[in-house]
Length: 193
Image (cartoon, rainbow, N blue to C red):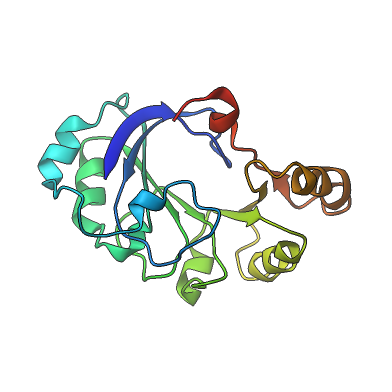
């Protein structure tokens, strides 16, 4: 769908320079999604893997984030192998609603209620990031946190533009649940991609 160099705007690697590869196709349908044009799997150009690799403008040994849409709808094996063979670190941001393919240096699992993740991904996730739309999402967050490994980094990310939820997460929940970290979409505050 698109590819661009920017700073990671959320989660554990916030502020790190990263090259994003956004794939088309998503059947999760989150009502708060900020990239709804990525939902359709058709209508985006098909790009050969070698062209994708040649176009990457990340620094050598840099981070390449594959996101979507929902990237697990695609077989990521060849793309990730090729990215790693030329020295890039491969990261994925996924709801985990399909089986995970590919070779990953970092797996950010951001499960969504409409299409829950496959069970296997919980043991592989390096980061669990839960979008908080309302207080009920905190229960969803805790249910998912109970399924990841003890080394998985835990993040609550209040939905962009919902000041009340932001305050509730910061002022109430995080103070009494220190295992969680706050993720704020800084790229939106800074007006960058």
